[in-house]
Length: 60
Image (tube, rainbow, N blue to C red; front, side, top):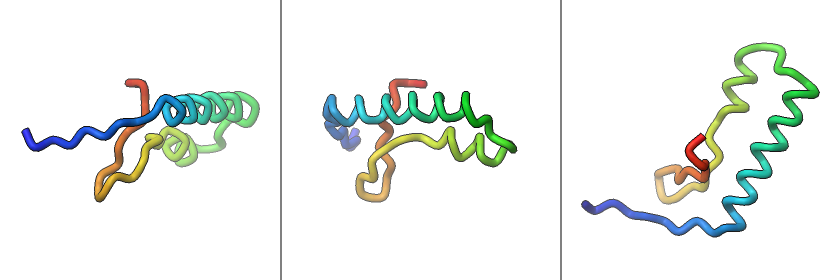
């Protein structure tokens, strides 16, 4: 109740998917040197919405 649902366009979902694929390809070529970079690379892709981050992930 009182939850705000934001529409995320197909193009934004596709953009997020392409970013995830590009990161995976980059990591396969240039493996992260330490666990800090791995944590940064796994940061959720999202859009700022007010003071919340709206996730664009497909449940991954």
